[in-house]
Length: 112
Image (cartoon, rainbow, N blue to C red; front, side, top):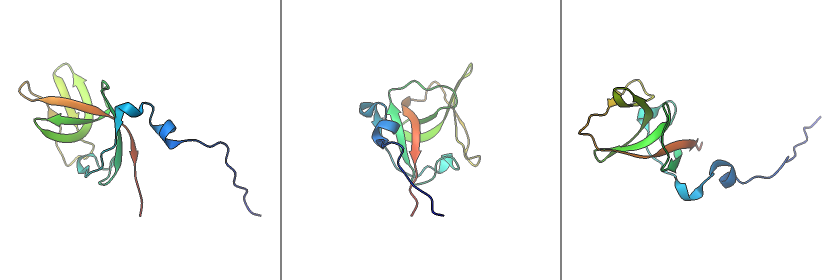
């Protein structure tokens, strides 16, 4: 017996994934610091101008260097923690220039 395949409803991935198109961008790069969560070559769906909460994945610029880390705000300040245990966390100092570019809302991974 064969299986019947049917479409329950059509949907636009743009509408499903991207709630505010004017506030999103999609960088692709080498994200080794966040392996195994994010792989090199993954396309990130980033929402701009959002305030991060603890454990959010964020794209940040620290002293003119871009990185992706998990955001944590503590009584002692802001910590940025990689998912890859081979890399160290960053505890921001007063002299660091931090720009939170956006929160990672999704990841698109392509297989060849």
